[in-house]
Amino acid sequence: MALYGAVLPHTEAKDVLMSEEFELTLRVCAQDPGHLFCTVAGLRFLGPYELVPAGTSVVHDRYFDTDRGRLMHGRFALRLRQNRGRTLLGLKGKERIDARGAIRRLEIEGEWSEDMLDHVLEAAGFTPRRSPAFLLQDPVGTLSGLGLRVIQHRRMERTGMHVVDTRIQAEGIVGELTLDTVRYQAAGTVLIHHEIEIEASSQGSEYMVADLASLLREEFPDALCRWDHNKLITGLALQTLAAQNPAGHSSPEGIVVSEQWYERIEDWIRRHRDFLGQAEGHR
Image (spheres, rainbow, N blue to C red):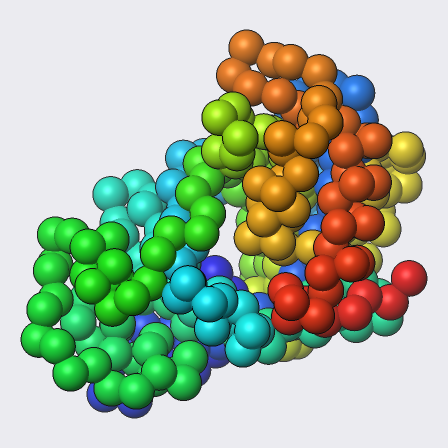
């Protein structure tokens, strides 16, 4: 979740945040992603940046859409997230990729509540809810009652690091770096994708995103590749292609996606870009 933005009207700051995310993603293309993640997690300085450990968590995400893909066609993604005992409802949309490979998108996210649900539906262009059925203890049931179905379910192990620019006297946090091991359920198996996300904490620190990404790629040549596709679209490609070809080498917990498989994912996304509502990247 982006750390800068504006609170939606008539809500408390701790509950609902509307913001613009600014981030860049690097896909792990090393033979041993786990070892690479351990090495990066052990870094404390990279160039002018200090990397401060921020803990680990296991995140469960579900994405929803109508049977006809109304949200996706409108370039929106509706996510229900469970993380550290919290249930969060989020809406992302209007994604665009700049010349440096950074992704900008709208994000609204807050604790699961009736007000939060109404805010998200309104932002996505849905008519106001007429049904009073809101189940605080059953978000999936509530969303299903509105004609929304789960289009993706994934589990992610996330290791976070605060990014501090040592050139700034106040030594404030300018962003976050996360090491994400994403497990998708597809074709009766688990497909494992590894990526590093770098996100700015304010508009004034957007410079850090591409800068730190370049430093990481210099530090680990041939081990990190630019990846312009968000986790939802990556997973949708995997779900569609998983039954056609082996995805990679096996691990005790699933199948690690191979380089050949990533080429197929890129090709599938290119051919379905209009349907997916994804912005064109600059290569």
